Image (cartoon, rainbow, N blue to C red; front, side, top):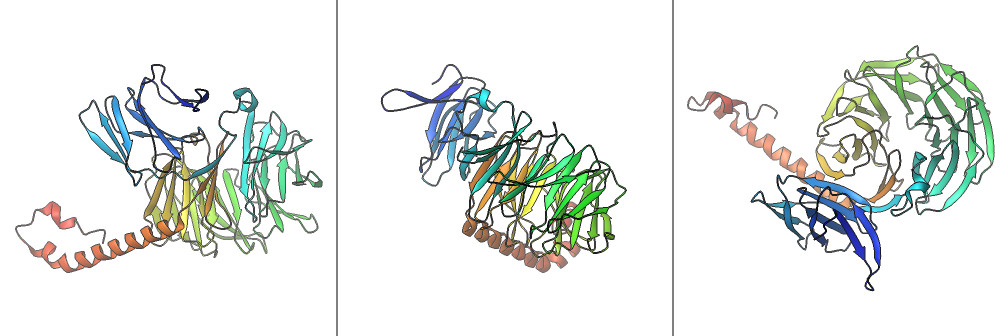
Length: 439
């Protein structure tokens, strides 16, 4: 029992290794998971807080209405908790956090002025992080090693002041002199590119690394060829555009604006291919699937939606309770990952739209980004201050997706068999006749 709402990790010789702060009242019970990677704590505030063994707070489980006095893990990782509300609750929580940046336990004064701009996993598996330290740019590995500090003066309060290229070997930054600068990760300045606007909304590289799209505050999109550094301009006439990204073949660009409109642009003639409404709320991200045949949107209406290139809605993925900041396809296109202001990461099956996994991570209230590793086996997320790397159990996710698909097919078959009964049985309550409507 802790009287100060803290959890302390101790060495065998009695030295305090870490102090974990996350509860608002006394802590009554703690337990390690069977694999030793996760610590759970519970107490008078009625919550269960989950921690990675390195001290990173993973998430909070809420449900008890009164203090919790005991908790334990089963062999399969299920958490059992007993509370003053006279309930025993069982919780499933799968921890996959591998690394966190900055490292837990780093002095607050070292990180409080730093803002995380971008995180990336390159093709050889190296995890890279770009930080704004005051108005200076720093490049780190997620292991906590500083690679280099760049003589840049970044544009203040700009979330997209820097962005990695697809191979992680170069990155672009936007500075106070209203220039886009291209850097190699070993510190060499490759090129300076002028802009026509005081504010850059978004900077993104094409998948082949041949083009750079710079979304400006006035709605124009500067399209730079990185072969000869020539510029073309897409005059969208839409200052509400918030995001832009390339198709896999770099022949198209998709943009999303603050009014829910999605537009696909042909890069051959810089004209619209298609424009459609994806809702009434801000589109925070619009991205192509790996084969380029589907577009996923992340929206302020708390949903992820899938669209054909003709603007026909394929599916709406519902489950988030706050705006969805970002969405990404796995490299094989079978899974979608989304991150939301409700502090969750959700994984979805593209095949049937079913939710495969829900991961709590309390860092996304004001911003969130998500990206798959090229292997598809890892996921990196980023917020204003923190980048986290997670392992994905792809075999388990694919098995679950197949199970959900089979279950859905069984329900459809059963409803087809029952349709006459539901329509004609006079003794059936009217409310029951619609149970199979969605099938």
